Image (cartoon, rainbow, N blue to C red; front, side, top):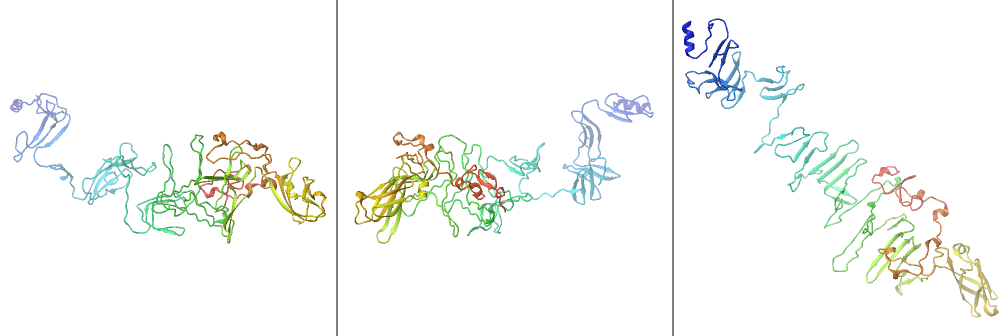
Length: 590
């Protein structure tokens, strides 16, 4: 025994005096007290502490199998220094193999094996497993499911990732395209800054109904369909087209087929239509629901302007401009063309309504023409209380067979007069004429405004006649110089109307529409400016006959007068400032 201890000491091992007794054994490069039955201690931070070799591996320091720590001294290493594998066995059966070509294999005689991530083993646990040649995974509380087979992708494979705490996934190398989680604003979004086209979709199918892109808002009762590159017949009126670049369709209430909007600093129209082959915008409305009480317009324009800034002289809800750039006089260039085809019912080609403050110019229509000279006229001129006011004469055209197409022109006067004509039988040189009670009622006849009478005797012999005893009810015609002839007398009565009474002679006339009253040149000022407050105006038709204009106005129409003048009738007792976009907002049936 002493000899063994001596030999071990010579080999550098620390040998305790009680070596041959039942105790812990330590092997080390310096003396230490072992803590377990066998403990190997290397008195250095790194290095191999155990080595196995055989005749195949060789016995050098770089042969065989070694156990030790790395250079930092805190990483344990198992190192097969040979070109071979490392295998793990249980029950004398190989279970795990680490191959020399960096592979790791689970070795099992059957075709299933579990890698569990909890203390529950096998099928009840969760993790990964190999099951009859398929790799499967399972979440805690879930079920085993196959990993999908990756498709054959040419070239490099692009992986999709979910960044930390993100609500979307995206390609690992492209942050511009994203697929968002349910409940977010977008489903799919693309926000690239260097592309000419953000999205491109193409189909070559000839199947009717095919489209490059279809969007479907599937809200119960309010479905909305949108198509790009739509391939199917679309019929409007008597015209059928084979498809549309953009096609919107709704079949439920509270949805519109197309909506365009600009806002913020936008400097362009919300919707643009352009064509160099046919009409840029075509609108067709079918309305067979006459019982609803409202026939919608094919086009409705509504302008709201709250700016007092100068420069916007004409504020038009609808503006039409036609321009001819050719060289021949082959047609008419028309700024606006309107046709009303009423057939068996009353019809109007154009209707104009105007509402405004009584202190301002309010006209139902204005017409202006310029050629060698200029001519303008106001229609339903509220300021001047005229049906028609303007430059030029008022004329009638009569086509005669024997004399050609001739023009007759109305006489015009510095004042407003009513004229009446009649014939009376004069007996023994005397005749009395009673004025028509209607004429008396609508004229001002008094000492300051006597009637004027012009007589024409229709007798061969007469000394001439005189008009005497003029009153507000009538006058006498007598033969001059005591004559007593009898015969017919034609007469003309001129009386002052109540309409515009107080206006005076040669009142101020309006200038062209583009010349505001406060911009009138001094030379255009007439001596008689008139005072509208002192001019007589007949009471309104509805005041005279006792009816309410809003009650006579159809639903959807503009109320012409009364406390709701200028408003749209939306229903009985319901009024608005515009025609609503939704039919259901009108008080009518479907």
